[in-house]
Amino acid sequence: MKIPRWLQTLNEQGTVPHSAANSAAGQAMLRKLRDELKLVRVATRGTRRTIVVDDAMQLQRWLDARYPQTGLDPDTLPTRQGNIVRGGGSKAGRRTHTVQPVLFKFFDPRKTNPWARQTARYGMAAATTNRLHRLDLPPRWRLLTVENWEPFQRADYAAASIPVMVVYLLGKVADVTIRALATFSPPPESMLHFGDYDWEGLYVFQRLAKVLPAMRLYVPAGIEDLFKIHRNRELIAKQTPAQAFDRQNRHCRPVIRLIQHYNGGLEQEIVDLPVLD
Image (tube, rainbow, N blue to C red; front, side, top):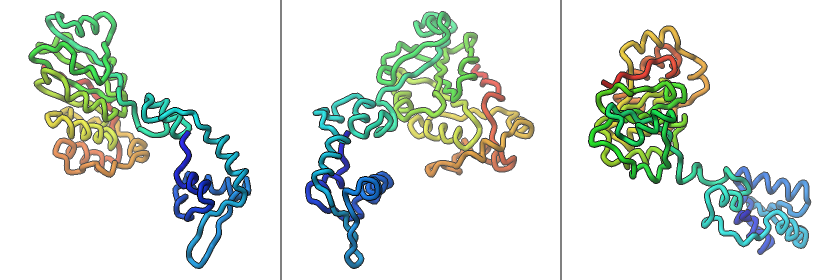
């Protein structure tokens, strides 16, 4: 675990500006050192406040126990292992792994594609994001991204005239997965996203479209009738549109109007899967 810079300076110099520990974690650490352990104090001179060491020997012993020198460089380790060394927990640090799993189904009317055969036999196929560009794909095919598990599990395009790949986004799709979807070779001739019709679902689409400009949002013809009957106000009550969310996005505007008019969102499970032929 890496010692915070302000704490290391405090240990080496015996004092540090109070503002150096202004973060929430820094303030929690300061309270422990000052109030519980009585190793430091806060000195005030005019408008200036500093943190001062009261017991240098005990502070050094405490630091040695809390931040043992393992000799491991977190920047050279796998993501979670490095996070443990760097911040004390596997989820501290980077938001996601640099390589993610991609679960998908592939449907080919000729059934000659290996991924179509694997889908027919096992129900789905999988690859990692760093190998999507190596998939054997036909010259013409279509991509459908699906936000939630149940629609993905139900998806069946075995009768489609043109091969179809259905990709499961695992709910909140990772950025590395979105970038990997742009590496298919050859690329799909069309791309369609099917997700929840609420703030978070629309933002997933906008994140996809930012990297994949040809991506379109699936909005069924009878969606307003579904909103009238099945809108869920709790979906909207629990969500706040992301700061980067574009309310003027031309693909999202019809759904945004319905969300605002009916004061609720629509879960994608109530909507039938798109017809791709």
